[in-house]
Image (tube, rainbow, N blue to C red; front, side, top):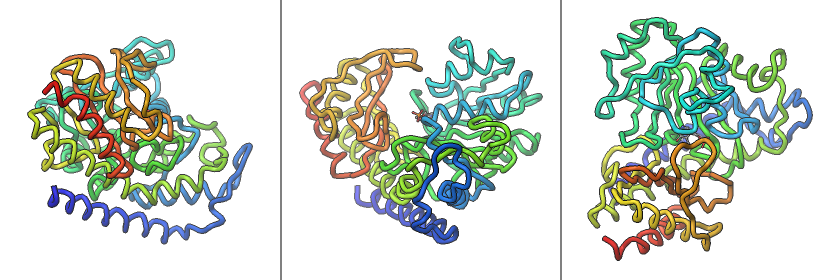
Length: 394
Ligand SMILES: *Cc1c(COP(=O)(O)O)cnc(C)c1O
């Protein structure tokens, strides 16, 4: 794995410099760790956090808030902010992540986007590639094109920056006014470019994933064009207040420290994924990606084709987590998801998946999605515990 690890460390070095330069450019100082309460007027720490995010992403503006519960919430607020009744949105990466079903109205919900008169279209990927003909044929009248880079609970490959770059050029060539929205969850700092650099208008991600670095205890970010960020701030906060309101409580220091740790946390998560992939493939289990394949997110899919193996592996990961290592996790119905899900996540922050975690819906072909590993050495303990649980059945 040495050569693969070397490449991961090169990207880590590149992104560390990117974060350093953003802190330096924005004069991040100790007084930025102060915070506001109540309305949150004149929160210089909050403002510097958002300037740093703009620099890192090379975006015009950013909204980085603890008032966002998670990635799903940020996606929900962002789409609600930019779409109006009668508008058409189109996902070009197939069915979106499961928790977005009720948000969009793919599963009926009284407050879904569809319930407000927004129209939803979807173009599926073909062999994990964009279907250019179908995209072109369906583009008329579309206001927002949505791209989900990471695979979610699907059996496809995740999409690289060059894949995204190509399709954005294609779409903007046909209609430059289409808003390109990117769900960037799990992809930050895996490569040396982020989506705004290749023409995306709005990019969203969770802070209990990559950019929180395992430090941040809640929140999400949205970066992109200034006029669009203003709309998102209006919807999250209040018209009139927009970005000027929203107390940061004690989060400014966490947000900055999390970003400082993020290149390292992502690097360790990638090493954990590579180790897992190598180990399990050598024992005849199907893995995506293979250990030496290009990675564009921190997710390792393990295709068990067997319900019991999936359950046992997740139980093993839980036994190797720092928190609740003696819990025997069971499949269960979880709000926002359709199938029964098994989730191993013994984390310091609830649901944090930059910490070692492994989950999957109980449906064929019984894929475990493993991600995270803030510390490679600790995560390796978890993976080996999981392997012990399934070894005798292989
Ligand atoms: C995790 C994830 C989300 C949702 O993020 P949460 O922070 O868990 O709400 C959305 N999209 C994708 C592709 C994800 O992987």
